Length: 492
Ligand code: PHE
Image 1 (tube, rainbow, N blue to C red):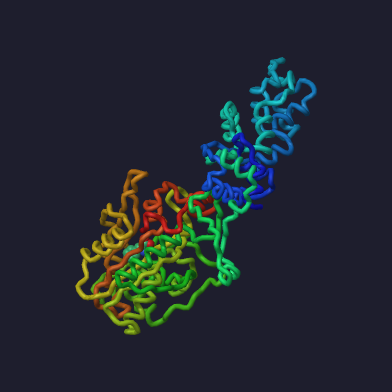
Image 2 (image 1 turned 90 degrees about the vertical axis):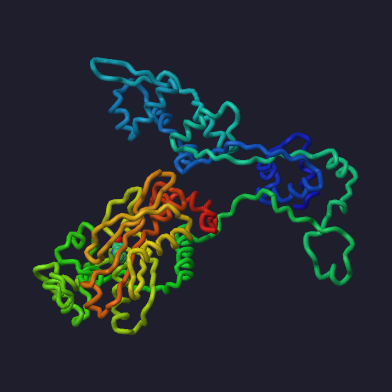
């Protein structure tokens, strides 16, 4: 369709853009673009109005085709029946009765201790009328707000604020039509080979970048992925190299090598997912025998150890890693063997698993930003400096540290970040300096500062969400994800 034929269909009364689109059987986006061209040439008048629109949910669409539960009730009700039995017989929820009562379709009678329902009217309800109307026209007009909200509360419709276009032909438009000055309306859309060869004396259509179009939800990166990418850039900028390790780990690399006794509560089924197949992993035997001595008597470290017994079978058990520190230790082994030179700095942003109940701040699968630095004379101030720098670059400037206990670091500290909309400090990471009991067996003499930070917690602060389930998992808020800009302002 061209502009002229659209102009011909317009009337001198304001008409809604989506209705015009329906009349000429074209998508709203096509109409919107033609309208903005006509508007630029003042051939039409355009009015924009904010309006509430109702979108039928799946349940609403079904109800609009079949019937609302209260209608089913009233249709099936012939005589006076006892409340409970009638609902059971018709397999209806108590809402059916509630709305039948509100519609004044039924009346409740008391008979010998029993409550009976009696049919008194069957007129079409406001909700039924509106639902029927929404099938044709989704605008919520004056006087319909209350019923629309009831439908929304019943989860039958979603109410959305939309800007509606109203269009009518202008005086200039009418005149133009009269004169049928077709060529005045014909602006060229693009340069053709013919124009290049023969020259072109006409005018080109201007692009209107403000033209209203329907949103297109194309594939895009997930907000968490965007954040992880941003963090990766920052860490690489700070001189870190990326490391990678397996999701399925041996208990050895996840626990034993970190001076965690085999009866440590972290290892039991509360937190750790153990694997049935394969149930065992290979463990480096030389290192394992040193780790055993460290745990039993401290080996050469001067430590008293941490356990009374130690068995290789327990260390071989396979698990889903509970922290990416397992990967850190795989790299520390390479560093001890001089396969990687020191000083060095590594990071990873990867998934970990813990058997935890899901709530607004916990997920059984989440991501850690793991990192470590191996060098001479590293201390706690270096560790704090890394976080201040890293979180500062991300835009989290309010951070705080708190001493904590870890089996494998001493000293250790938790990192808290301030969550503005929750108005409280939330834990965003854990860190420390590895104990000699963990580094000496690997042949590392320097200090190692290390940390594990939670990607999802940083996301909550930066995205200003107070429930992580909105961002990931089965109850993700898809609209929120769709509306999330590819380059979030918070990250630039
Ligand atoms: N592994 C710890 C956790 O999952 C974080 C950590 C890593 C702490 C390295 C100290 C050193 O919470």
